[in-house]
Image 1: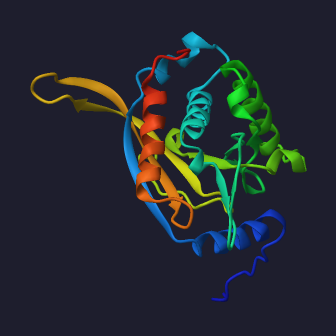
Image 2: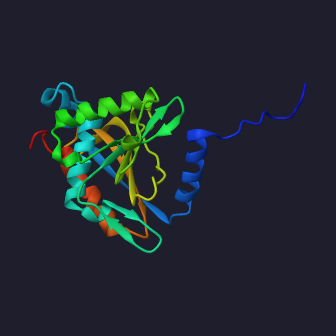
Image 3: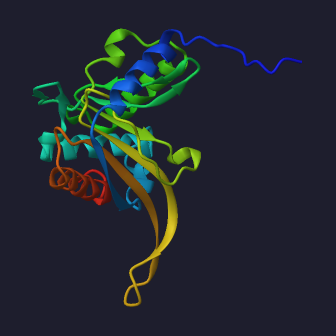
Length: 220
C-alpha cells in the first residue's frame, strides 16, 4: 500500500478560480459585521410568491448601492471604475466548482423580475449552462451560506470588485433588554471591503443603508 497521494491537476474552472483567489488574497481587506432583523424578509412570499429571501436581499443590496455608490466600483492598480448600474453576482456551488452568475441592472427590476432572473441563472449555473454574459460585468457579489447553517463567515473578494457580502443563517435571538424583551429572527451580514477603495466609514454607511432596506416592510 503506497503512502503517495493522488495528484489531481487543477483544470478549467478550478484552475481559473485558484488564480482568482491568489489575486483576491493580495488585496488589503477589512471586515464589518451587522445584525439584521429578518422579520420582514420572512414575509417575502406574501409580497411575491415566486421570490425567496435571497431575492429580497439582492433587491436591498441594489438599493443600498444606490445610496452609497462608492461601494459599487472596480479596483485597478492605479484607478477606480465607478458604475451607475448595480450588477449583482450570486455565488453558486456548481458541479464544476464555485461560479458567480450576475443579475444585471438590479435596481431597474421588480422583486418578481429579480426572482425570475435569479432562478434562471442559478439553475443554469448548476447545470453548467452559463454563457459568458452571465458571468461578466458584475459590480458586487453576495455569498449566502445561511441556508447551509453557517451563522457567520468572511467571504473572499471577487476581484476587481471592491466588496462582497456574506450572509449568515437566521437564528431566533432574545433582544430588546429588560424594557422590551422579545424574540426576533436575526442574521449576521459581513461585508468584506478592499481598503484601497473603501474606508470603514463608507463600509459602515453601506451596511447601515442595507440594514434599513432589509428591515423595511417589503414593497415600501
